[in-house]
Image (tube, rainbow, N blue to C red):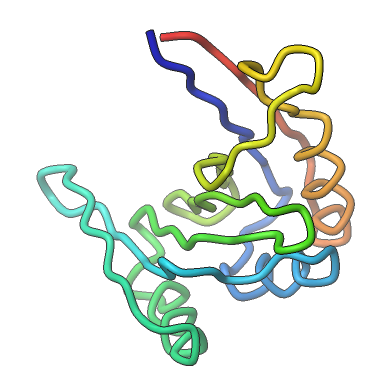
Length: 143
């Protein structure tokens, strides 16, 4: 048995990866190694590309380029004060994104196997409201 946790975020209008990362930076989030992007190619394979943090601006330029608007792209984000992070995936069209807590996922104190979704929602949702966040859906499921 494995556990899957994610938060889907829906915006009223398209957003850029750069704008989302900048909004989250105000709440302590940053791009974190392995900083990477991936683009869904024609056969639905994902190819993470790692780079150093000093190339973050270049990576954001690539993922936000008009040539990639029709592809799923992602970056890793990390909250150093909380010691957790994950993958931020922006879907084609950029009005829908997902966060998957893959870096030292926070568990509930009373039930560590369950993801502390309230913590993640409180850390992600408020800074995204000004960007037109319209709704979210959080899941923590056993596969």
